[in-house]
Length: 349
Image 1 (tube, rainbow, N blue to C red):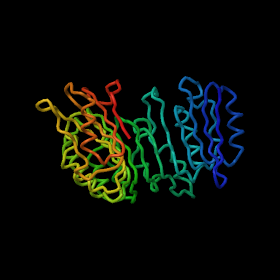
Image 2 (cartoon, rainbow, N blue to C red):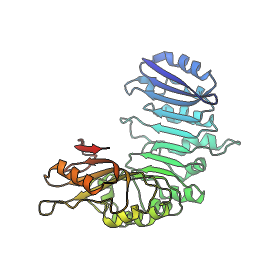
Image 3 (cartoon, helix red, strand yellow):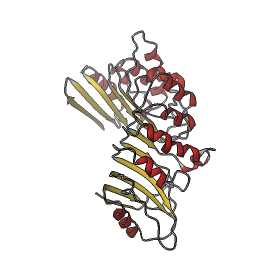
Image 4 (cartoon, helix red, strand yellow):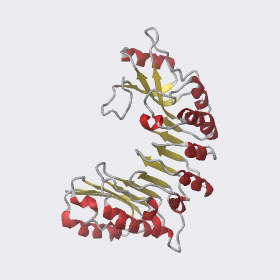
């Protein structure tokens, strides 16, 4: 089965979405036909994980040139890394959005990101244009050598990863005057905190770190204090979306002091917090965001360690926070999103 969508956009911009499944040897003809259109500036390609085409052996995607957006999903294999992606990037000097999303079963081999963009950087006409990047730090790790290609970057999304970004990357990013407006990351350290504390203008900060990884940080408590008391004040005039997704008991749990710092962010419209509380004398202390002058869309994670009526807890949260337009509450005794089971959820809008 082959699926292709060609979407006409204003100003002769065309977006092509491709889903590959069992296309076999027909793909070269399909690719040649699509690329001959000449006006395709946005290419999004998905492959079925069980299809042999996922390794890039029969996918001449390099026939597409001058792309503005390139998204490769589930087809990232050795040939894609070694040949196809580097050629497509080098042949697209005005690329603004790049997503390289590996399939979950991909082997542990990795290719440093700068090897994919080296051809583009070496071009005499090279000028950094990339604004949006989504990759896996495990499969395509960033290093300080990546920075020359990322000098125009504003949005960085690093998929769930067990690997840290090297400290030198953040240092080099700052030295080149790169001030991210949006950052999604699953591992953070002191160098990242220092980078985020060095400028203003961040609009989205999404930290989703495994609790076991946080526990390995020698200065975890101090790092979380710096996020609320140093990083947030630097971006309080612009921050719209803040998520601190470490759903287990620890120094990252929200407190009244942290809420006071969040209240400085007047443009905040989405908030995801971990609030882990233990019952005292048959009841729990409810988190009141209304008293901290926090209103807007809220996704609140709350962990309970004893059998308490979940409906009553949800109702109490609603009563304590009357200014909220949306509230989502997750409940669980083993409160972690990585435990292999879904958590019961209550929500209202």
